[in-house]
Amino acid sequence: MDYKGDIKNATQKTQLSYGQLKNTIYTLYGEENLESIIQSLLGDSATLAYAITICPNTSKVLRWYYDVNKGDGYICEK
Image 1 (cartoon, helix red, strand yellow):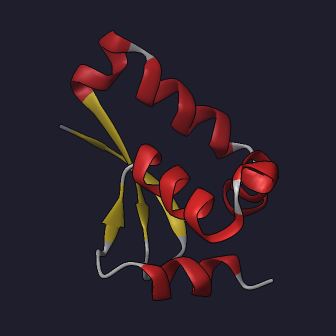
Image 2 (image 1 turned 135 degrees about the vertical axis):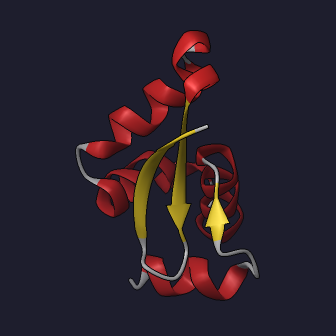
Image 3 (image 1 turned 90 degrees about the vertical axis):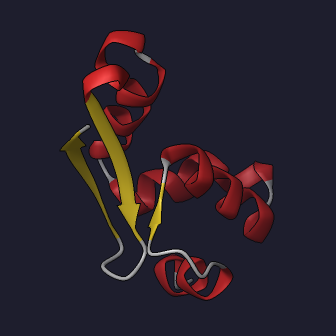
């Protein structure tokens, strides 16, 4: 499956937060395949994206986002 292409076609945004990415995948493929698709898209950085999102101190200074056009996840300073 072309997950990156499907996500790109499903949204008009250029960047998605981790939560928005999960919601988009859930909408497209359902809950059953959610984690495996995230792992397929992000590889080892899926754990990093999750950690940045849920850790209060880290999320105050860092932001993780998925670049829809490039199909990759990135970290930037807030």
